[in-house]
Image (tube, rainbow, N blue to C red):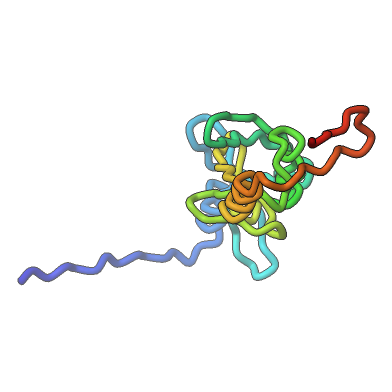
Length: 160
């Protein structure tokens, strides 16, 4: 069994070396760029963060359906419900007929894109809800019924 020795750190009591140490830390450079520091309310000295305003950030999502792929630009703070509304314009599927999957999970309409982790050029999968798809197929299979005329259409279906 091997014993590890603890390293002892020495402190100097001179104020001159402490002042030069903090000045060196404040002006440290990493690969050509200068690091900016900030003092937090608790007294901790940390590297300053660059704030990017996420509220106005527009992201582009790759939305894949079974047979098509669409690029949709939307604000990062939008919800999946708003995304479904935009997708209904592109695909023709109503929002209630859509199932949106991200990272293998179906997302609810109230969830925000940025809170789930969606970022620029991420891929989202759009599927038609199988229950509604089955209802449509049952309606077509029942074919004995007369189709309802489209309101405002100059053509009417006549059965003899």
